[in-house]
Image (cartoon, rainbow, N blue to C red; front, side, top):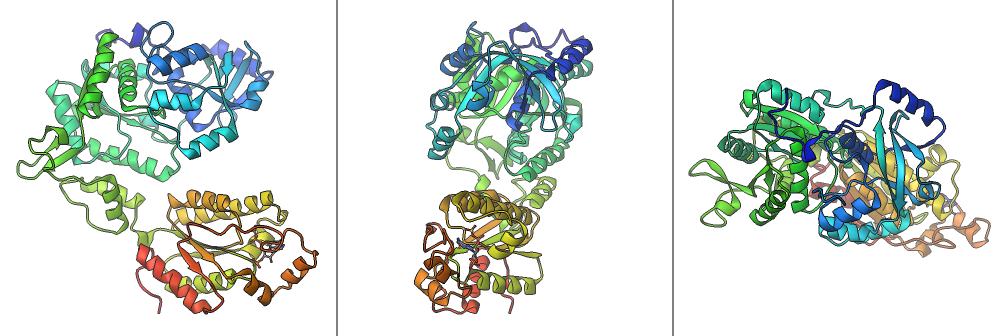
Length: 559
Ligand code: PPS
């Protein structure tokens, strides 16, 4: 029935899910072998291997194929493949492995999805991989994370027991074989796939529509369902925004599906990868947003390997008001002509509650995005006070809380050092490790409050830069984060000594006391610095309120 469609890569579509009897055998066997709990990226890769989207791969790459793909975009047998499909494990787990042994791969709930037979395992040179595959140098953060974590890869064949379970958008989750059956049923022989990672607006819709119509192909909106990104809200918004734009295409010739693709690489490699995956799903064309030179070099590589998928492209679309049309920036006769709005400008408009121009997007897409990117005055935020014991953090935090509650537009929660230590962190002491755990807990609670449009006012000592930064990273994508350094000098704090703790610390009764016998790292990136030696709590709070106003989180002064 599906023979009129384009052939899969190397001619055969894999289905690595084994028959029912073998499934029962594998589940039985898994009780006696090691288990690995899959993270989100691994789940996505496993799904694409099991359902045949990554045909002809029949498992995670062994060392030879990995090195060959990284260096030459080929498997060792010469088959074109652009992106390594690897399985990362900890060094500790690698040390426990033996060649030939089986590992049961399980989802977060413990459901066994597949059995991996270990062919080999090795410590990859991840910096080299990044240079070869992504064509960039590692960032400092990536470098240090790698040195800390020590990642190993394990390669081997897979036997699938079941595909990963999805509760979100289930109707759009199609295997290549489902898709091919559907194409055949609908009489679709020529299909152009587009793999968006960002919301689509008028320009993308108009251009993908005209590019596929020009080659008389049906259109598959194959949305990249990457749930591994930190802000899950934006994932749901994005997919709902595609559902909205779908109505702008002719229904007889358009289909939407989700593709759990998390791999990242250079643009050229991504185009090749999309062409191969698209081919496996039965697509004859792919539409990419890429510069001409890159699309051409990817096309040349596909041709050399006799891959019969055509690459259609556009880049940096602009709106031409006079002719009321959208064009790739590089097709303009006069560079700089036409209107565009960068992603940053768009978000800034949403956050400031400004109008989005009609030429840019559809009302239904804007409505969807407005819900995910409410104006700052409706977003949650965290004010994080840090400073020595007795510096005035709690006083300021309490006064700020009262002012914000007086405004009444958001629920306010106070996470003061002492309160948290009583209720959340009662088992913790004051070692560096315990302080880090304490601050991470505060950060987690504050991030949940911020996510749900509330206000968290935190006031721990939080003496270390690293943990303060972790908290900032946890919160920033969910709402506002304002770091206030209460910089009252230690001499003033000691003189105040309201709780008598400095005296005890000096006498050696309290050990590891911040500012006396334990360090306090001054923040380098504080949004506000308040020394309470000579200012009243009212003045301090006013400074914070003015800052919140400037950033757009509050719209008017409470009094
Ligand atoms: S930390 O470093 O952020 O985890 O500290 P925090 O949770 O804010 O707790 C600080 C309060 O605990 C009391 N306390 C100590 N502080 C610092 N060092 C030592 N060794 C210590 N032992 C007890 C002290 O009352 C702190 O409260 P504040 O409100 O800061 O004065």
